[in-house]
Image (tube, rainbow, N blue to C red; front, side, top):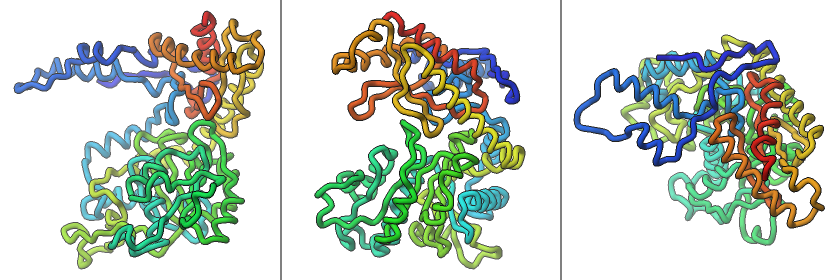
Length: 452
């Protein structure tokens, strides 16, 4: 049933898409095509096989070299094989006794990631389902460090706590504040205002590669403030290989925690995210431990330090680290660095092409893999800069997005930001992307929007 969806030579500068990014249907149409009803009697295998074909056919092909819609893309073969194995073995990563191989692999991967960050004295960590949960871990751990009694007696043991963050931080920081009773109104964006009166900051969240613009907060300056006021410094990053790692150390020695998602720029299969902590005194364990006696007995016949499940807010946990371990083992650090290099080079190429083309305008010079730009159809190109121009331009991207989805030729996102009109956000993640693909994107946007 497996099919080869994409033929790509990573060493060449061309790639040939052999299928559409998506075959678009409205929800009501798709319900009819899929036959979603669950019945009392099972269906024959021939029909089940067709259901599988339909699921693949009507899904968005994120491995397509012209899929730029999210912060993940492409298909990593070794990581995909690891995903198949993990599902087939069907084990749970809370104790060494049920997951001996994967427990050791997670430990090895975490140690290597900590070394890459630059924590010379080591640290701790846990894999979890996505960067959002990593950020929520950071909020919980920072609060526990500030007020350990919170774990047992709750919010009555602490003053009104606040989180400081930049305006373009990931929305999971606010979600974490809501989930843990801190409250979204106690998440203050920098610069803060008089709302800080009577409140106690306990954590600063910094971002290395924001979701929309791919921008970097001034982390060194933020670290100075955190050290002065004894605040937990959490850094949300996308990737830490090569050029990106040069933007962070030696300040990384001053981080308290890091959210790192290999399923983004490093292309590990979803989901594959790690939360890393510089602390080596079992802070992660003490914060989350519930000491379930049926899982975490202390009188086992082996080293119970490998029963890592008590560090996690989850019970059941997949061996996601295996997806990263196998591809790292197969490719090595140098190849991972080169993949990031190539993706960033393609992002720079796209930005330069946008500057050359009539009707295209960068929102800002890209710092990372995110390239944000406006497309002005011919009807708007001679209009003077005015609120009327931006009002009309605001309507362009949604229509172009609708048309590209219905044709299935490519997929990229758009959004407003503050007072800025809707713009396209291209995220060049996959090293499988070529200049030909990026040229196609600009040509196709023009073809889809030139009559607006």
